[in-house]
Image (tube, rainbow, N blue to C red):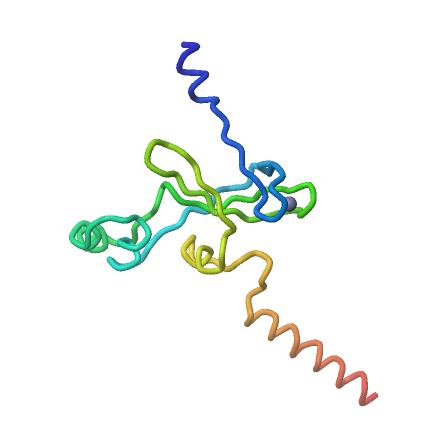
Amino acid sequence: MPGKRSKRNKVQHFYCPYCEHRLWRLGSPKHFLFYLGAAEIKQNVGMSSKSAALLAARGDYLDNNSWIEDFFCRDHGKLWMKITRKDGGKLVSAMATSIDWRQTTRTIMPHSPNPSVSEFTYRMSRQSGVRYYEK
Ligand SMILES: [Zn+2]
């Protein structure tokens, strides 16, 4: 089915928000966004309060049309972009914010380490530093 194939291969390009060069997809896993509670669903999906409340009652709402994906700009290196599929299938890209990250699998941004971990490391290094100093 050549017709179906060509439609499927329709590639949309994304551009760097800093220099407007084309961004290259790195094929990273897509980090889909999901929302907790009616307020978040309503705000992000743009539906009525009633529909949002119904969805919220069923649990977390996974947004299949919004995800964060790794891209590469030849001048700016790796960029995490939030991709949103609009009505009609058009994809819109924007820089992923820490708020977007919080709405993925409730993980944290990859380049901001877990604060409790870094605090622990800091304490450990201080301790070893003190021990060294006392010798
Ligand atoms: Zn760039």
